[in-house]
Image (cartoon, rainbow over all chains, first blue to last red):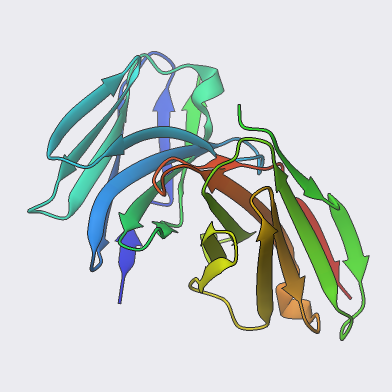
Length: 109
Length: 111
């Protein structure tokens, strides 16, 4: 089987740093992706890690540890517009992408 | 942004009727996907395609079928709609499985 675990909700204040964790169990693992979704709209791609380590894209960074089946998304200098749902997703052999249930991030003033 | 459109955007239908949702892309992406999104379940993969006439099942494929006769179009059919299929349906495309571009979604209500 396969499973992904991420917190359902996270709250942080504007300007702060927040980390959203994701643990996974799956066979045929290729890599871990992160997506953002505002208010039920179309999800948008944020980042992808195939190898261990940290990938940085502006205010967002993503980390992967394949040996621990663990990754996280780090959001720095939080802004109100970062309030959204964030999904981790495992890329598997054969072209499938399996999503976690999502973390709702609320950024407070 | 990838040009991905979904039609219809909203549909209300009765239990037992067949329903077809259409996804159209202008990016010539290899992969196309259908997901459903329900509260508490995130995005669940229904079916996907890795090329014209090449499709495979996802996590929640029962009651759904797909067809891809052209690169740009991916159709999702609910053979006999049930109330449990009330959901928001998203189409996605990509050249890789890990970086997907999503359409605006179709809100389907089965009464």
